[in-house]
Length: 98
Image (tube, rainbow, N blue to C red; front, side, top):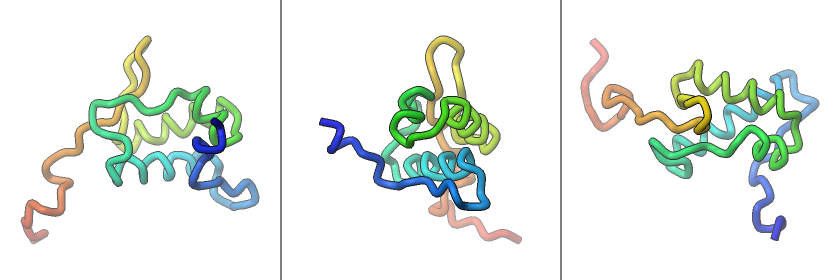
């Protein structure tokens, strides 16, 4: 069963970029692609830690990074959820940057 749920993107522990930033980028990519839908939960810190082979603290810091980017919101006792992207962020608005 675990063969079908292996992470599609591996993290590079030898990179100069911290693992939590790499993990946050992977999750941000899933949000951008629609794999993680707005108002739906992201995987728990424990699940992310197991899936990507990192410490739970690394997964927690990645979630903090995503909150700082405005991509997720955390509700105590419920988990972290994808934030609905603002209309101004959508490229289809067509408003030029004057």
